[in-house]
Image 1: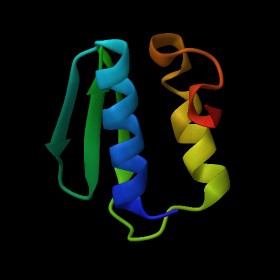
Image 2 (image 1 turned 90 degrees about the vertical axis):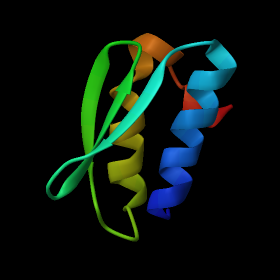
Image 3 (image 1 turned 30 degrees about the vertical axis):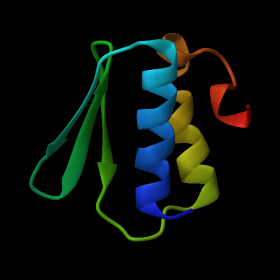
Length: 70
């Protein structure tokens, strides 16, 4: 999955739920904060599907369990 697609999916899901979304560029990663929960995503052009699912699962408390499958 492309990195931009991962970020767009997160941004759209946060907007649909009415949650705050923030991206900040760090040294080698991009920091993403959704409703106070912060995580980082490496700056690779391609993100492995398994890695993307694990990353999406980190925001399950804010966006709902299995939100990326909808």
